[in-house]
Image (cartoon, rainbow, N blue to C red; front, side):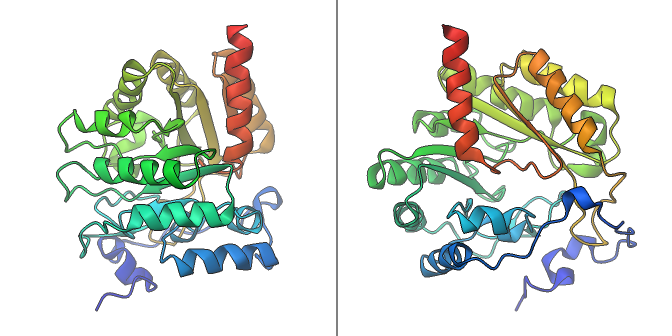
Length: 315
């Protein structure tokens, strides 16, 4: 029986790779261990509803802060991903279980119990399913809407690379408030960082969302510190704006284990500020660029700012 708590079993495709040194983190990205009552309450609700969170599976450094406020990012469709990206700590391999038809209802119940004004729902890649889990996403969105009609919904989806292009329509038709899909890195690093994906397919996915529903907010993010240079990051910004993406996130890559992609360097807070300034100059409605920025970090507050920014531009 596979034990996903053991790194060698969690990432079998990485087990025989040479170790990469894990450099000491600078002061600006160190966080405190979670101890608050709010954290414990959120943890209990997640376990009660038998839900998986990307906060735990990906080892997010912000989990303590977010969970203390009752903000957990639900990860649907299981805890095993069919991709094997070199940066990601989510377990990889062939999922042993089919999709759980009761999961959307459990997610909706947890959202209601947490009293969330804004929720982020993400997933593993499920290349073993014909529609990549598109209908499961749609069912989850509808279940949350039914249970918590005032809660705004942000989804962070896979790329649906191996699916018929029409499956994207299923997700968009369910009307999430924000459609997020991360490009993760610059195109030149895809062969080593995200080898199972295609940069321009992911970019086109987000562009198609806007074509299907021009009112829907789109969002994407990248990590820095993987080996990219400034010009590469600026080019990704230009590509995103050409696809009419509204919201950009940029955060520091942190290496989960010695078997994962090495940290090239720790990008300074001053460099993140420069990226943020450049991104706003290129026309993004909303930008979050800090060392600890992650896709769902402060997502509710950022959504409010995003909506206000669009209204301001519309006059």
